[in-house]
Length: 115
Image 1 (cartoon, rainbow, N blue to C red):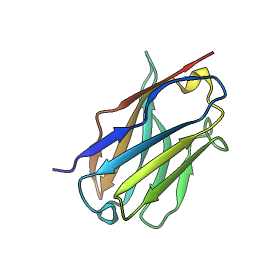
Image 2: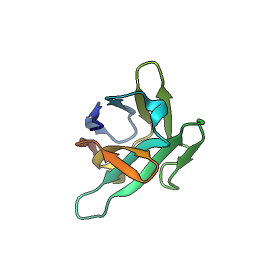
Image 3: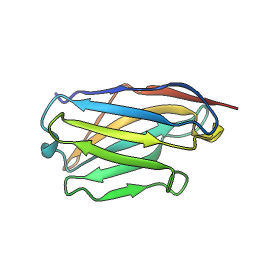
């Protein structure tokens, strides 16, 4: 069973940066794509950013230009650099991975942006 373990969440002030990391239990080249979703209080889970095995990135409109997703193939890690954080970025951030139609999720890490 694939395991995804997130780290890096916490409390930050508006405008500050934050880095999230997700370590996979197996070689990330096995995954068609990996990325991050988030769920704000009282809202549905939404896409933040994805990166596929070829390195192509996709971002939600709400984070485009502020967040950067990347991968470290040697460390089996996908990371998310979040800059210029806003209060609406608050939520639980989940690591995501997909192998064909099989989807895997991490337990989530809480990010709280305080004004």
